[in-house]
Image (tube, rainbow, N blue to C red):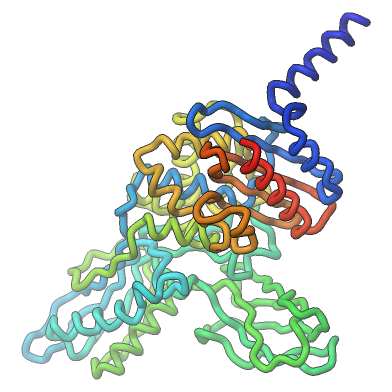
Length: 478
């Protein structure tokens, strides 16, 4: 028994020395923060140059990564598709154009390629959706078409009809961050609801407008006014349901308070916009807007391309846009087998990890990190960061990660982390906080790091401050 205790004690001491827990008090200070009481914590900091682990705590424990999962989604996609890849949406037609009457004796076709940037608030300055519709209307005119006898058909055959990952929460899927990709997307697949709230708290509010207007959806409003000065309203509803229930609170005494919801059937909205643009341009069109899940054979007229993948991944990691992440998953499957199936896309990502990193188990359920069933270790995340650092796309990949003061890192101190000394991705869910990326220390050494905290007892802000403090000490000491 004494020998057993001696060996066990030796192994515990050795493991702590091996992973730096005794050598670096900053780790003990971090773990001792009251906000982390009761939490599961995984932490690894490795030298980018040598790959040597400098600090670790529970490096192999599997934890929910939240949105740091987007690091893997963007990195794998950049490696497999290349930074210049662009999504393509095509306008075309079936039938024939009667040159004498200038009638299209057939249908106008929109062929979707899964572009998540169309009309997006993050891309509309450099790639305005208005340009798409103006160019397409002009291409219809240039083809000699002044009237369309058939319908406007949205060909969404490139992607499966969005089947929610079964591990997403009911409270997430009706909100803008829980929207899913289609082969044809528009406006981030987001509906903006505008509320008027009474002066007194605890009173029913009123929905005064929606943008865009969504036909066939019933909005059931149970939102009340509140003294709390932030959006605490949640939208509930399945993509297959025509009803949406909104519950919670918004600040009292507001005349135009915005709440964002997931958009059902974005391909229909896209079609309605194009139809209205055609009619404004004097092109006669009395047909319907149809959706085809079967591929349509057509003659192309005009293509519209997204910004390059490097830019798309930069917005993904800077602003943590779930729609982009899941669109990339679907696109990986589409490029491999000509059909964008979410499960197949996730298999491609999982296979990439196993072939390039380790056969150790990890569980990646989606591309965005919204699933609480995803689980990866800090060691695996850092190994992936080291892999990306040494890859052909390493420099471009790092540029997709925000620096302190930018995007989702806007609350990090730009004094403690000036310039691009810190580049990382954040992740947060209820009782989950995570960060992973690269840090250039004051010595000039660059490190890759991953810190994941699950089921903490403090507030999100308190855990953020503890993690920021840890990274400040790491920058000063390494």
